[in-house]
Length: 68
Image (cartoon, rainbow, N blue to C red; front, side, top):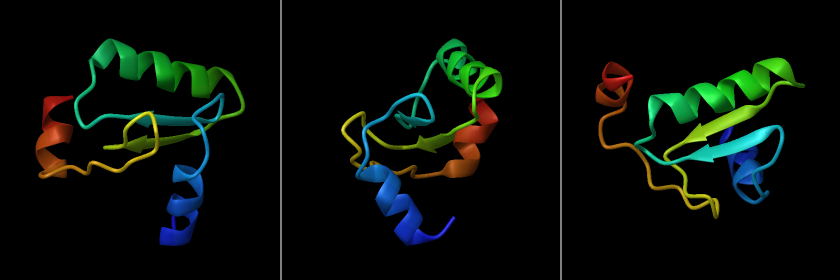
């Protein structure tokens, strides 16, 4: 995904095919989002983003994966 595509998604409100999740999220909540995408039209999940579309980033993305 290109930077301009990410910026475009950040300008949108989360909905049926777009979800923003903070840098820390409960595994059950993440599973709900992914299941909804899988059972619907698919979607885009942006991690490290507030519900208002503000990127907060991940200091150590690999550590975040290891926690999941």
